[in-house]
Length: 273
Image (cartoon, rainbow, N blue to C red; front, side, top):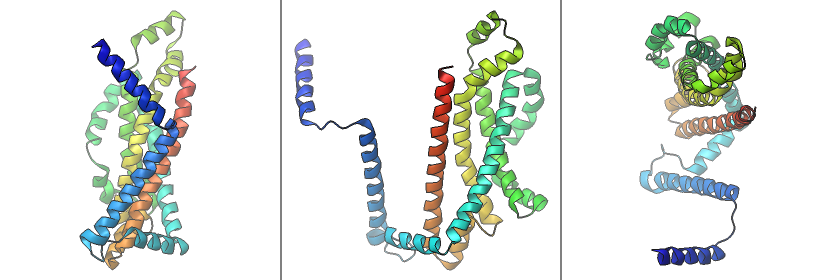
């Protein structure tokens, strides 16, 4: 067995001399670019040879539609409308979810009071409220923002509450040994320990907020990316439908990247406190 291990070690050292010294970031970028290229190639195969339908646009046709729609200014207006609704609803819902999760996790009377209603409401999907919210607040911005707020609150709240429950009791006992009061323990022990759970809840709720945003814009809106996708079907403009879908994916990817970068800095800050 020892001879086998020595042989494998020599083979690995020999191969490492032939392989280029590629850093991890370079490898990550290369794999990401390769993934995009393979995806575009598969899309071209499906659109150009497999489907052979004018209703299935090729990547070139989609890019042409994107440039045309962007040059007219309509795409920017749809993006601004969708992102404004999403950021307001997601941020307010996230703050409300964090506050509820911390209060319910740290204080039992608060949890006993709110838990029946929250456990009931969180199983009702946001799309079920589109019609009532539209009746109550019209087809304007408020109904869509409230739908996103409703959708994002419960996910953030549950993750935050689980973060409080996952707090090791030894940390609380150590804080009490230094004569820390309830509020000191809450702000200096409980809150920093739940930050990773809060970040996870916010990232998950962002994806769900995109979903309810598109559904709301499809059913009750005159602008936005969801409206662009839904309205384009009336003209069989599948190239514009693909433009809306790809724009949604790109905006979601960019939003998650920005939030993850900011959250990573926050996590490092709390890690070395």
